[in-house]
Length: 239
Length: 322
Image 1 (cartoon, one colour):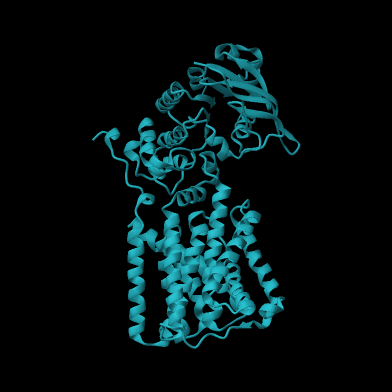
Image 2: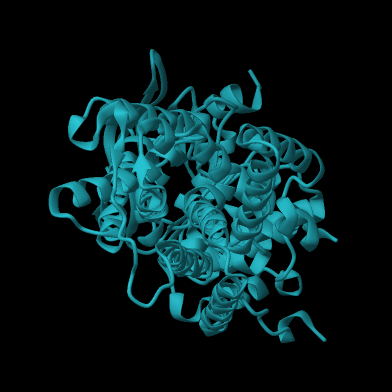
């Protein structure tokens, strides 16, 4: 499944005033790879994601996607390069219909000429086509998550960052989202999954990275990583 | 029918525009003919007053309605148009049409510059910055002798214009054409890629950036276009009144009305500002004639309170939710 290096983060650091949120983080992700990123609250996972997506400017280090340096690029430029993300809380465009929500990335970063037809295809892929003309507020929680994934699919991403895409969902709904992410991955999209639901992370990920206090403390095959004493101590709470 | 067999619903932005231009032209011609048949000079002046607000409200709606960036400085942009017309008249003796074109350029550039300085601000901070812009401009004009300073400036209007019964009729027709154009531009924006991007920005700017929307560029385009159309609304004002001074050009009523009219009609829709402007400006004109012009802002205030409390999405929103 894994190919050439797609994402390379080298020595990434981020500070908020005197607080160091990230320090010297090095991560490589190969094309088509499925990476789980875990860590306790405040460990720097979302900060790292925001540095990759361009929401935050890293103070140290550099990030490349497909060999292209991302530093200094606005989030919309990164999206056009094939970097898609979802948010911890679904963030739909509330006044636009479900179909129009998916047309937005197509109009600005994809296929503007056939935006409506392509948006409908994306909705079919996440099984939301029947609700194309509804407003986001009429969707359930899991449907709003699927809408976010449809917007991501519309970008034809090389890399999807799913930031707690399963928070607040039931067991069955988590399975739905995992299945969707696996389908996207099978189509060639590399995925970074940030998640607190360990079942989802272990089922989905080929590789696991663990952050604690803004530093990467482990990187490897999921079961091996979860068995490491430092991971158990820092993340799972065992002595 | 299975979900996968559903057709993609029609999308507003893909509709053709011909129906609007034909319909708007027909309404405009009917209005001009009706007022000519009425044969009362006051009709032209009252009509101009209402149409000026149609242009102003449509202009404000492009940035405030679609993108959600509330501009409190409408009077500043409008005055930029008015005083550009004064400068062109004083320096070269140019009339209202060149004044409108010049006003559009100057106010558009003002919008672009304001955008660069303020569009990284959000919410109330952006609004305060635009309010400050109007204050700064007013101070400049008050201290600029060439345009009359605080005394104001006069324009000697032609007694007649070929093809028109009076100058009042001419200036009304000019503003009628501008209103059709301004509303048409607003409608085109709404149905275009730009409009979709602005609506995404209004709903969630961070998510819009994340899916590829160049938010700053779109806001700058909207700010420039909105500013230019506000300048267009203001440029004929000295020719309409024959005189302009800073107190009148920067009147609070312009800032308040430019916000109140789209909100009452339905902000973020091309028709809402038209409905709001016609309703509020007609009421104000009626109050001016029958009671006192001092009642104008009192009426606007009450209308705003009523609509915000009972119909927060304006008249258009109320009809859509029924």
